[in-house]
Image 1 (tube, rainbow, N blue to C red):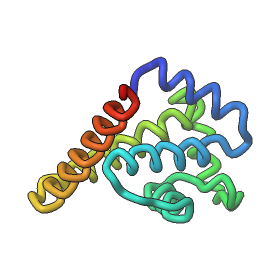
Image 2: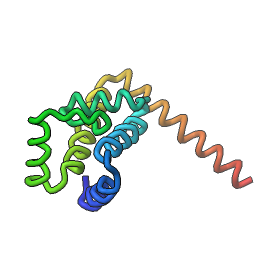
Image 3: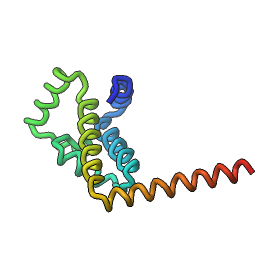
Image 4: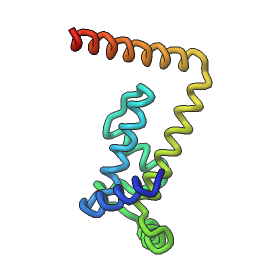
Amino acid sequence: MSGKIKQNFKLLSSCFEKGSTILSIEIIKAISKIYNKSINNEECINLIESLGYTNEFSREDSAKRMIEKFFADVFYGNRTSKQIDYIANYLIHKYNKEMENDEIFFKYLNEYRKTINKAIISLKEFKD
């Protein structure tokens, strides 16, 4: 992710007590939407936890995780930006790997084509 985007996430996450989880959920949903995948909040939280990050809503950090988070702040400056960057890269890699399957790729491409056609029709109607 670019430096400017990371700075914006850093500012946003400092505004919320549960900023890292909220922002991670939103990133997961945004990336999933690009790849035409539907995902709910529970699935997002499961993904966050499966990747070793804390669900800030549960407040059940182990002593080990609290120490990791402390040192992450020291070494990485902002663990939220690191978490978001890691999750984003993980999802993009995962979804791109699925695209190697021709059936999935052509289905995605067909949905993309339909969306573009709808946009063109809407623009023509707007022009008229």
